[in-house]
Length: 130
Image 1: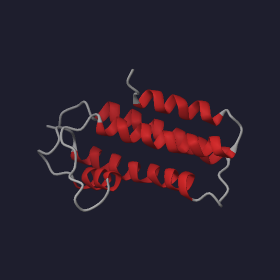
Image 2: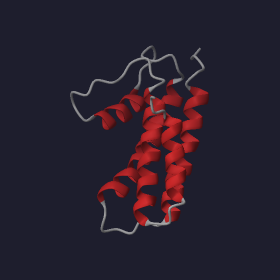
Image 3: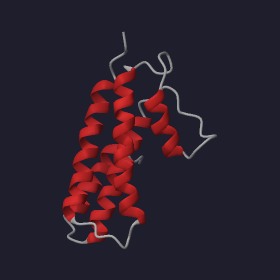
């Protein structure tokens, strides 16, 4: 059985209920990956990763996408790219800054933000640009 972005965001929500910092960190991380996979599943072309890693390549691609590369509104892609970058910041903090406090409220913000951007991607990445 394949895992979907919806499965990941559901796990993020469940992690918030576990009442531990590691669970809040996990929630933020899973929320980012739910958003990442939601966006990549909708792209026609995946970016080349020659210059940077998979995640930065995707963010840069979305922010600098040219007309004709994707069948979506370029401004929407740019907006989603910036928001994906913001969501990645939550994940980096959750996964790597272990000496910093990561309260439930921060995990909740990360999950809520990812859900909102996932909804934006689902809505705007099915309408072809004019």
